[in-house]
Length: 202
Image (cartoon, rainbow, N blue to C red; front, top):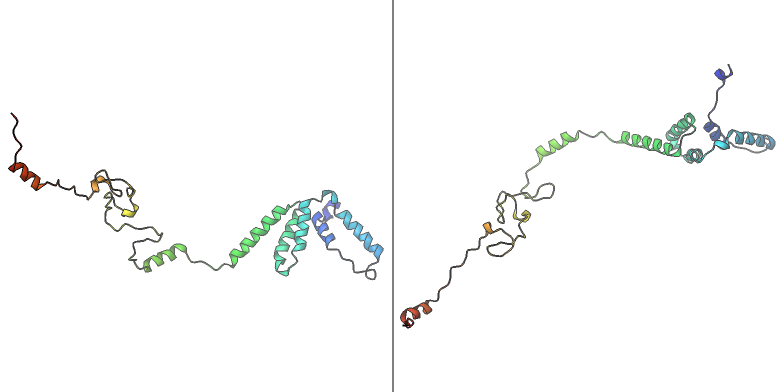
């Protein structure tokens, strides 16, 4: 029967109440009475099970004194009363989730991204530039003079290749524009040979 009507307060609640204890002086509360209350609070603190996480949780609540943190402090306090063994890391995760949710709720509603992009593309004027939005050069439609490939000459992988025809760099042999020179003849030397043929040997 006792267990049915006995309302047990959590260890955390007792510890938190002990830290809120205040003495207003001998006139308001006799000194001996206050020290008796102080000793009871120390006993209720249960120091044998008081770990660093529990100390961190209490310090966390005491640090959140600003009125703007009332909702967050109430949330942490409620969770700690439900689970006195709650770790400091769990408190941190709970606070971060709460702050992230509150931040998202403050953001204005964003229009559908695909609809915005589609509307922007329909209203966009064609660019006369040879560059696309990513900053890369787009082929102008002419074939590469280095290799006849469907790309710009600046993007050709043969721009440092050596031609086997003329020996110059920057194009392949099949795209070489160098015309071989016709052999030069010495007209005067040929006339001398025709007019003064060498003597025949017998």
